[in-house]
Amino acid sequence: MGHDVIEDRYARLYEQPFQLAKLGNHVLGVCLSYRECTSKDEFHHTDSGSLRWIGISAGKYRQSLFLFPFDLLKIAYQFKPDIIVGASDCLHVILGQWVAKKMGCTYAADLYDDFETFGLAKIPFVKMLYKKALRKSAAISCVSKSLSSHIKTITPLDTEVISLPSTINQSIFYPRNKIENRKLLNLPLDALIVGTAGGLSKEKGIETVYNAFNILVETNPNLICVVAGSLDSTCPVPIHDRILYLGKLTHEKVAELFCSLDVGIVYLRDTKYGQLSFPQKAYEMAACKIPMVVASIGDMQELFSSTRNECYMPDDCNSLVSAVTKQLETPSYPDLLIEDWATQSKKLETTYRIVIQQAN
Image 1: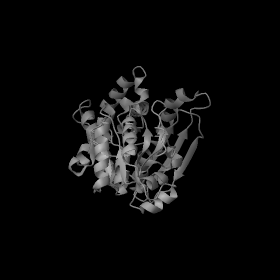
Image 2 (image 1 turned 90 degrees about the vertical axis):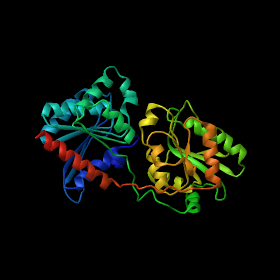
Image 3 (image 1 turned 180 degrees about the vertical axis):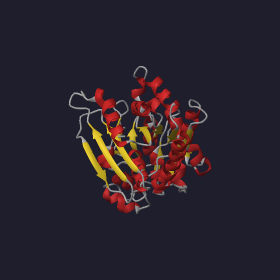
Image 4 (image 1 turned 45 degrees about the vertical axis):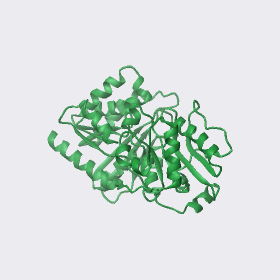
């Protein structure tokens, strides 16, 4: 996800273990890195329960990768868990299920995306082993309703499959003064500003956004287009004096950007990834209470309304231009119920307790 889970304490992969610990559970999180990094073993403060994090490095030449299964099995035997949860990608889901089988304990998986669309799934046999691990899971939590529906088609009927969208930190994403935030980012104070942030990937739909930007800046002399995030070398930001790239921003700076916008864009393509994903920036922008335009696909179709000019057809540049223009002319502001991590983790804990009890 572009962050160090332990150090950055970032999003779903950190928040779920942290919130489960706050509910009084004893939680151990093990992060297996594919790169050389600083190994960690530390306890994080919780009001009750306990949360320990172990970070294992792959080593300078990735020589430790092959030891990961045995390291993890040793750690698990020492901890004696009631349930093991695999997350983050196909390989970790596979590895988690292998350890759970060796220990004879309940297994669950958490899917913050459709891992079958990740590059690791192209490795021979990985997708087959991943699906096998899912079928052996007692519970699976999914980032979207669409992904939950898909997972139910490849798992047994008695598997507990729940939808659990990645929520946000509402102490960071909340409505702020537009002018003050533009000052913080050195953006024009009196312009109309349209923008987005995240993985600026062609595969995810940024090309449609760039094409729309080129039209919008030519037809609106007072309009600025802004993007921030990781770049895709195959799909560069258009060169124009009113199309600005702000680089990769911290989580806090992303919130400042969203609160600077007149219209925010949540882009997706009409692909399997687009149909099953739940872009976190949809909640982030909605929490900032800014007018939005969202690709009408997957869960986004349920959350946002075309009658309020919030939707555009994915991969359709003209549809995006039209929706943005209407939002600039007659803004509509999102009004979504966004659950916090604590509420979601109570659902997760309930699910885990049910499957543990059933296994016993």
